[in-house]
Length: 163
Image (cartoon, rainbow, N blue to C red; front, top):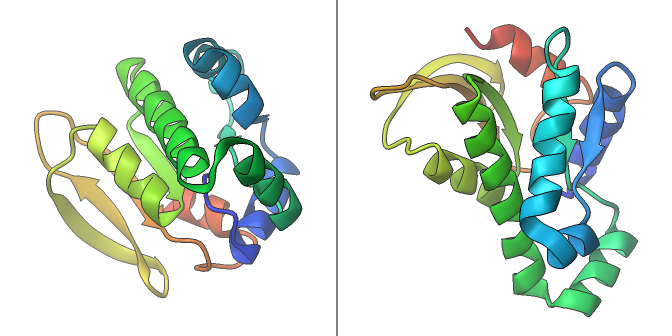
């Protein structure tokens, strides 16, 4: 999750109650981008065999403002999108084929990192957000949403809807 919308923050909080979670830190990414991405992948490897794992950079407005003041507005967004895309690519390399992605720009970055160029639209998860299946040599089940879609249980609903 890269979105910082009100709905996504509630979804992250709900998912954290039942799933292992790892927060990507902008400060750590600036200090050691590859090392911090590797920590996220290691966290998934240690926790992802029996449960869905939440990897997120979503933060409240005051944290976002502080990050943007330190690193710049566009640079902060690009940093988070790049990190989540790198994590998704690393997860795909390890065999992960199902992704729920929160954030419009984040979704675009993940789709690009996975090399997805076409999606088959499946059933609706919530209004405005379908389950999708990528075409191509490697098939990925994806739920892609921009910020304010879905209720607090969206992540679990999306995972249940993906093949």
